[in-house]
Image 1 (cartoon, rainbow, N blue to C red):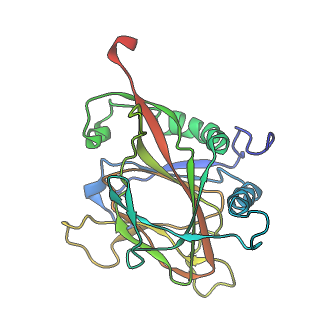
Image 2 (cartoon, one colour):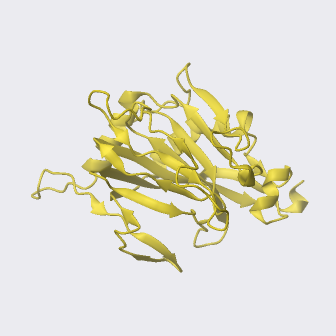
Image 3 (tube, helix red, strand yellow):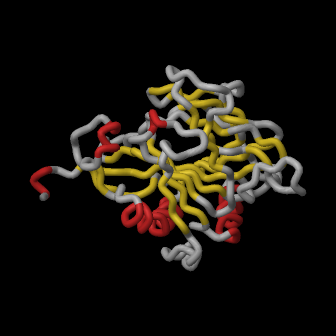
Length: 262
């Protein structure tokens, strides 16, 4: 574990901010909101090891050697979760892993800071949508790593990701991080083998008239990462048409900057 996930990203890692006025189709009502991708942030072998660690965490001596993926629940507020397979239908492993979260944060931080400037919040115009005049600094990634498994038409209907606040209320999340653990970034049903479907799709808000196909898709590609603003971006996990989709989800955590610190 000591040498796993060193802080330096692969040399072919590339970052891209999503401009919703220039996407196909454009979603101009999201023009002030933040979403970005980082391709090749992790290697394929690193993704495989993360998945192995998650599945190994479900195995105990004397039980079945088959990893146990529980059905993912739906958050309904006040810390409550319910099973709603008509809305969210996939498997999940929850792994509380502070050291892994720290290593992932070390790998991700240069991009969040240098490419996207979201290591501190409270100045840029798009951040007005965070509905706060306070200032925050990035502290870490949420150590609660949620591994998700989609297969055989499984999906997650359009939804918003809620902010998470720690029990002591000292930290809160503003962004979701999705790490794609497999996939070739292709939606070609006619191609040979591999994962088809399972895109993360940004869709028009419910109050905005839209056509069925007016979505901006981010296709799963092994080692790539999707980072996006919570609370305001309506998105969905599209059905998996072929193969199995594996992702890791966590949150970017922040603490408030007290004014007398400056």
